[in-house]
Amino acid sequence: MRESRVKCDSCGRTAPRYKSAPVVRRVFGELRKVYYCISCAKHRGIKLQEAKEKVRRGPPRRRARRSQ
Image 1: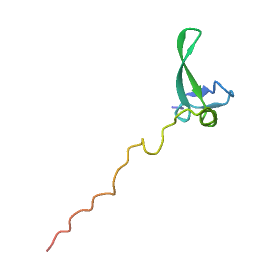
Image 2 (image 1 turned 30 degrees about the vertical axis):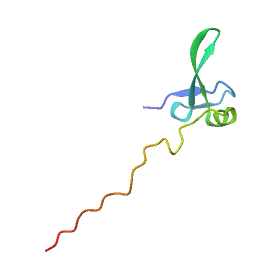
Image 3 (image 1 turned 90 degrees about the vertical axis):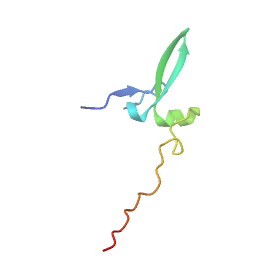
Image 4 (image 1 turned 90 degrees about the horizontal axis):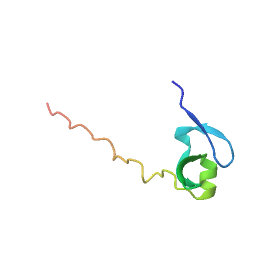
């Protein structure tokens, strides 16, 4: 199944939905969800998911050695 694509509200570029920045805007009195491509979102100063917000895990646990 293909990922749905959205059109950037600023430049018109088509990008996959997971690579876009959704923003809820008030347009003519009603709330509307608009999408921006990554480059337009950075240019406009929209916060993207940053590395510190992602789930960070520590190093993998090591198994205890069995003594024989």
